[in-house]
Length: 211
Image 1 (cartoon, rainbow, N blue to C red):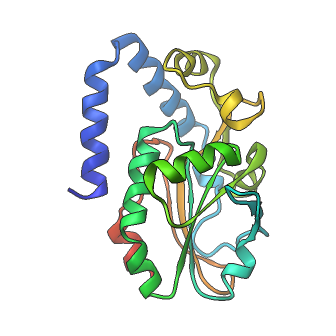
Image 2 (image 1 turned 180 degrees about the vertical axis):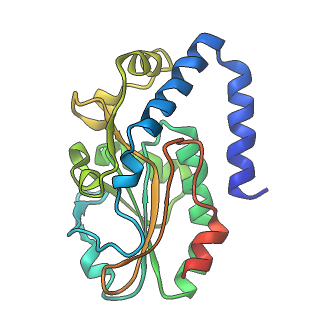
């Protein structure tokens, strides 16, 4: 089963377990995000990426600009290790890591979660690529990917045991739209996949094809 099928299967199973009124709030939040026109303002294919220097899970500063000198770089913005869809995506990316390396490229994931939480995600999913912490979504904001969650959705997340204040170490209540980019050695985006619905992610086949 490929990533797209796995995501749909999980979404269908999850929807069957969630109360209708809760599901309605979650769907409405996605619709509001779609109506906000944020995706149309996000960086896309043909755009240059901003300077990115962020700490990895052990606190080492990683420069994307240094990485692209060695080859193309795949950048995946994800919400956090608490998100089951993000975990499915990260596992799928790990599976294609050998193919990515064969093509002389590298893979980097970016999340607003603290390095400690990122380390947990890395260990849980046996990840062998860098996971960087984007404190307060400052880098995601440069890509025009950051949005504020409505209070009723934050309350639902808390009921699910998801505390964004603790995960992200701030009280902003913000997340990045999940997005995948492929950047060439000149810093130009050559592939993008950006959807307001966090249940949708770039297919691994499309990512490999873009390289």
